Length: 239
Image (tube, rainbow, N blue to C red; front, side, top):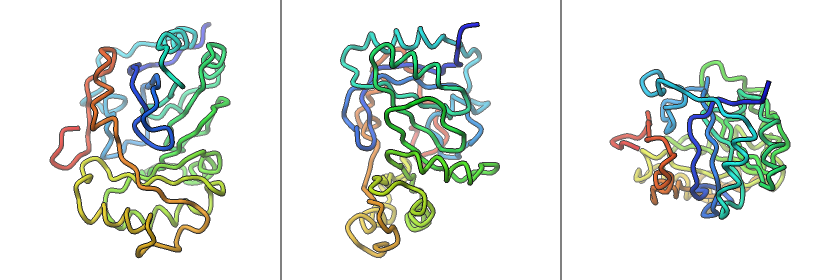
């Protein structure tokens, strides 16, 4: 039996976050996520009000071939939902055989399979999440992305991840999209990065201010293969 995965969408865009922001990439978004964040901006991968009536399965070979057709792509990004609920090793092998560098975006709540070239962990606190598994995933991160919904999240998250991330790992502080104009949230992020009230809490890790550039540009939706946005989060915002 061929290796297949349930796929929510594939599309060509650019990476909108983190160290590789602005670089052209091909995205493979898997279906399914047990974490269920209340600010999820990809609710079509799991929420009963948004999941498509039909979710197709695609072979890893087909996905790799489709990704390699986007000649501008500097890497492929496997994301979700939560991609690590699936065995990703065959997909990574297929992407590598197609000559593509492979990036992963995960909450860290499940074990990472496959020899990814770059791992972004964006930890979440949700009922049923195995905190020990999240801590283990953090040790494998090339970068960490923390979603800040309120000012006190900055201190909480930096203290939480500091003991586990590799030395020198960049830790990005992103305002949750619905809070992107909240002065208190932005000030808390600025303070952590520039040496304000949260200085000294993060030890050897390097907090950096981040943003979701792809949403400003709406680049995901420029590819007709991209699914229509189905967000849950965003105060006063539809995306």
